[in-house]
Length: 102
Image 1: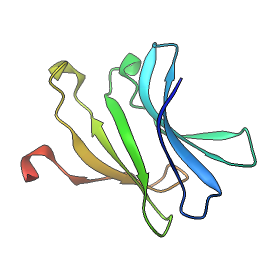
Image 2 (image 1 turned 90 degrees about the vertical axis):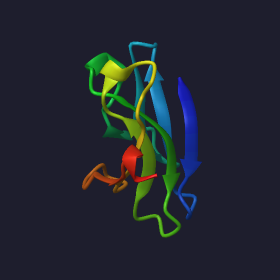
Image 3 (image 1 turned 180 degrees about the vertical axis):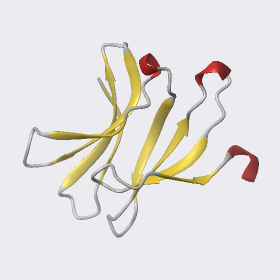
């Protein structure tokens, strides 16, 4: 199932939150508008025990994708969300804001 999504500024790609039959959820995937081939950007699905990613948003220049992620699933249902960025190919993921930085 596809949940939140955002089109790249040039309209050539889309990033979306993906859930596969409820086993894992909160993974971010990007794909070109002209291809069925998709790239897994984050594998934070709860089924892996590593967290949950949501709300993807492209930067205006299309060089990065920002998203919110709760990486500690032991806090369920009270996740602590941090803000991350990642490049469209899934490289260089970086936490840019933590919940304590409010």
